[in-house]
Length: 375
Ligand SMILES: NC(=O)CC[C@H](N)C(=O)O
Image 1 (cartoon, helix red, strand yellow):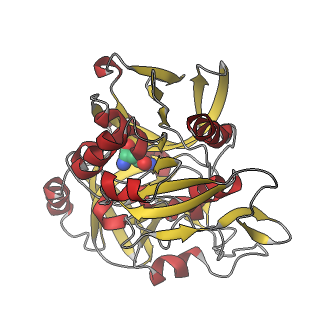
Image 2 (tube, rainbow, N blue to C red; image 1 turned 135 degrees about the vertical axis):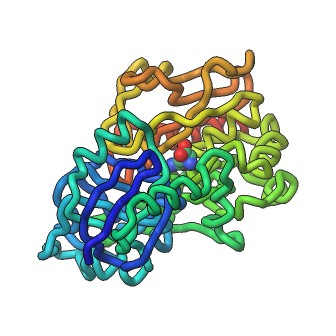
């Protein structure tokens, strides 16, 4: 079906719908990962957004039952240059088209995704409408302008779990598939409570793989309730929307600081920074891809990282007891912080990859060592 993508600044693209065929409004961002579209689709941090992939051919290895990063896709639409007609992979059980249909997610293909990406790079991520009703593009542009702004939006409540649950799955193995938590001989299993702001499964797998027992709790869980679990450490997850709008999680984290070791990733990092008295702001088009270079001040090494964020920590408002521990080498934005005297640290990038490079996976060990020293 012919369809139009209308951006709020008036730019129009024409393409063809696949997946679920309906009208949809959301913020449009681009992702530069060359592979890993299933992980991108099921990353809850994309709730409230449509994602345009810069890689030109998508869907060629289908969808499989294992590479989910959450229970389902939460994004509003998936925009690509060309949908592969013949998925080919031994793990594939479903086409991308069928997957998007099954989950009610709109697909759009056949447009110039390079032109769209360059436009967003220049003009910034913005609200957009996809519609098959192309008779009045100006009306669609107006509709895009009326959509809710990402700034000020709490989307965590749309994606967090309803009840606490225990996580036991470990890394994926070619012969065995996903492994289970195994107590390391002679090693104490550290008990981590993970605050689910929209958590990606691979973070949980990496925690399990690092020898942690993990319980995941809803985003509204209070500090008091978390401390009742008697955790060795608390993990703050990635998630969608504006960190400053998730005031209940900021309050929880503020009350936990100094009582238990804390590690945060992406939204969790932004929320930790807000709880420490700093502020966050919206980037023009964000970082969404698998090749963002950062410099880690502890190891003095450059790491190529997987990233997916539209907001960032403001270095100018960093509090005296907060130290910036890594910077993005492309645009010098803050990539990591730690408390100068307490066992508390966080990163803007994704050490769990999925998809992307695994240069930063050592951070899970850093968290375990922090818990070891604190116990
Ligand atoms: N992946 C994430 O946790 C994203 C955090 C936040 N929603 C942002 O866009 O910056």
